[in-house]
Image (cartoon, rainbow, N blue to C red; front, top):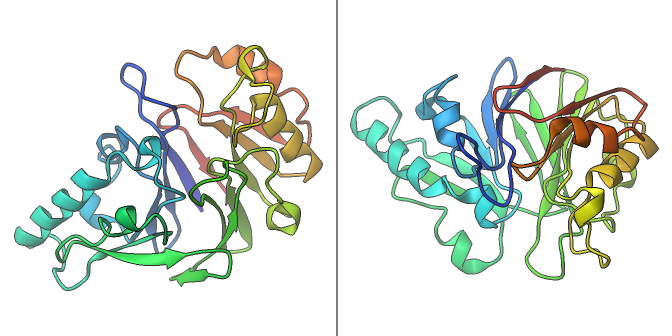
Length: 249
């Protein structure tokens, strides 16, 4: 697998930035994990959108889905131009609630909704995906994703607070994409469904993840400070997300 960071910022993109979105490539597939603001523009540096095989959405918060509408419209146009098969809508794997969000996922012949939950598993080509509901507040579901291909394991943590029951889901992960929404100085006293950089490093360390990619960062954070606060992770290589960064598993 190869992972390319297309966006990593939150709650909104900084100048020239983008909110969460990650291109995952295998020998057989090109898929997108989340589709935040600015993600499609960065995807275009690598592939046209009509070459995508699937989109996986962790949840429906704006920073993770802001480019969805233009993706759907763009795929429709590529079908009209004969560049994508009009009989093969792009599958969008996503939570089945809230209903109003689900209703927007099927768009003409361009995209089609496929529900996910903790009981679901998806096999596409050489890729197998499972899901874990994260601690992301008391409202709508958010799912982490465990992607397995060719003996390698990628876990995308999405938005995940300290109450997420990682357990075996995170075991043997070659790469953990973990959110670091907060630094020490702005970490709320009461957990609210997000991790700090320090907490993400502790999760990766306690589960002996092979490597850690810190993401979901405010665009004004100093990468050097992010690295310092992730010093508790020593099990492998720690990287701070930046647009265009590629990691090979």
